[in-house]
Length: 163
Image (cartoon, rainbow, N blue to C red; front, side, top):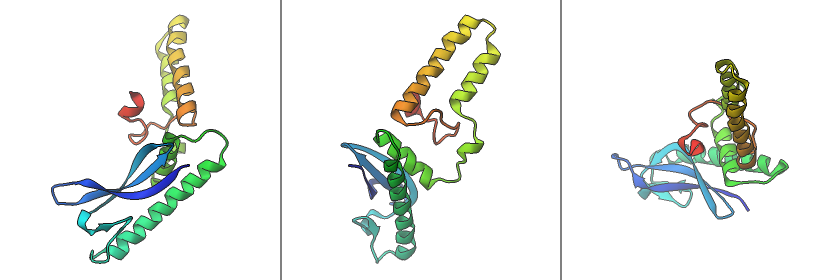
């Protein structure tokens, strides 16, 4: 069963503030998504900022909106056919929280790789050899993330994905 909650990190920056993040748990696997909200850990209680914080109402309203969007993404993903994984949940929540990234307007990584392979190599054997890697990437993305391709954006093409 998948759950979404808010969590304040223990580690603080040089100003003494800690990041608040969305915690996603599914089948004992945890993934986190940053909210870009930072608070003093002493002003954090449960899943909200305490009333003693001078901007508590504003921050808590933003946190409720973030949590609601994350829950909506989780519900939408549950309605789709297929297996749910922690990675799929994390990607769905990231998409819900950052609508500024327009995947429709961004070229896909594997589509780009296919175009480059076709343009660069004259030898059919070399093209076929390189295209096998693209096919394996598509299978990997389909199995782990439930997508055929990913947009070329820094939030999507991460070192952990490439690893």
